[in-house]
Image (cartoon, rainbow, N blue to C red; front, side, top):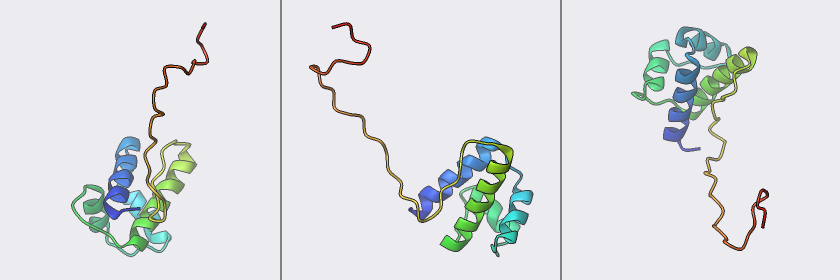
Length: 101
């Protein structure tokens, strides 16, 4: 996954769930991350970058926190692929499942 996409998606999960960055930083360090709390805050605000190892440790901390709280959104790892679902082309001959014709 592109570093910018991972940063944006991780920051969005943190913001959406209103996760405590100080607590996430402690969990991040426990998972082997070694960036400072301020670097993590800057990264989450879109004002700094992290190496892939650091990004993944933060994503893992976010995901473990979300799993423990039963929260649905998860942060992506750098090894994930980002793809967008494309709508199927409109086929006027194709009948929908609720079509009466």
